[in-house]
Image 1 (spheres, rainbow, N blue to C red):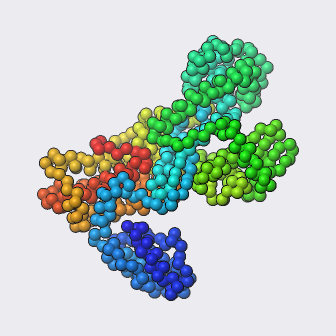
Image 2 (cartoon, one colour; image 1 turned 180 degrees about the vertical axis):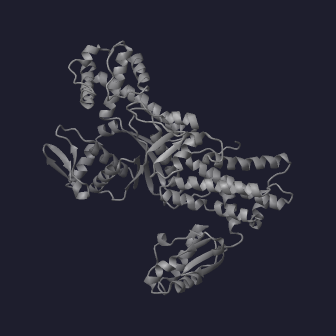
Image 3 (spheres, rainbow, N blue to C red; image 1 turned 90 degrees about the vertical axis):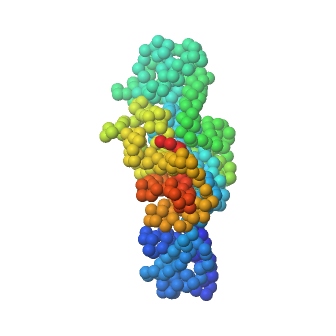
Length: 585
């Protein structure tokens, strides 16, 4: 309904352009809002107030002219000028019933729009280092990214989802040497585990898999491994120690052996991540390996683009990107003195490849500590000739896990963390997805395990799913009483449903298309989560106030048509959030 009123208003403004208005306002500036008081109609706009100065008109006079220019519509019963120049729209009695008929006709597609105009969007999210299983923080990024992709697709965007596998660099080397040390221990060697290694239990099965594959071929004595190494923490520097241990590992088992350890560890960790995400209902159209990307020549291509643009300089034996010319705080090294390309070079090349693949919106879902990263990558894209606004980053705040009042400590390196899989196994996929999304991504999230597991109305996902199941229960009761639902009759008489509870359900129900656009445009899945809870509340309130299965067939079918419409919208919204809609609880 709201888009139709916006269309009518834009048509009126177009009629006034020339005689009254110097130019038509941009459609995006024509804002229609729901009213808080039904006495003021269902929708209102302050467009006359905002255009009055430029039109050199009194706001109320301009509002009256706009009302007079509105095309006739069966949707609108009357329009009035109120206050300083607001325009209030009162819906016709059959407007809600007509929208309910659309819900029944469109089913799963109800609420979808073409607002996005087919814009090609690449949503990159999670992209966690494959140095361990996904933890609860990654889970929030996964739930957010998957839901945002769903919302964008539902509002007319051409969306693809991508996971960038950070399988190159020092962290992977640390994982490989951690697995090798555990492998040595399994072979009977006794040596202190490096302070900067990956200490968690998930490393043990990796080491066992390595032993099953290579036997004792990579085994070496502790004395050979440790001879001449610098002191580890706390007596020494743990960073220097782990780097020295990595080099010792390479020297003892050779480059091919080290690569074998690394590749096996990576394959097993990546398989775990893929499986975990699949079980969580999160899928990707593309998985891009950083190592393979670097080997493809794409980084060299990006550097050549920068060189042709005159954006590189040679200094102190290294190659630098003139990032300060694009608002960055300092220039950035892209090739070190030893010829090794930097992570920054890889990152800007990766984003250039996204743009060159035809995506005009590069939407990165990142951790909260990536503010500086975004500015640097944007500078690189601009320097390579990409539009300044093609990169959009959404930063996800941290998750704290609570069991009762006790906060659970987390830290991957120390092995003190709860995996996404453990969380899902304890509270279920549905609670995980919904609780991750109930709060805005730019706010820290306190995840209450006990609430997520509870089967009470205080648990929002349970409350919403119960509303869906409640409608299913009503339909079962109908069948048990030897009655059937007549959809045509119900929709024909839906306009007669005029009680305050029924009007409240209609009003809440028909907000759904607006909510989808608001959630997609604002990158705000929590808006949809909160709306579904509100819609469930109107259904529960209506259920407690009225009897649906009454003797009067017309009233009975009309009420059933209304609650089945609620059930459809609940099911549609839950599907976008990645939450199931059970028929019974």
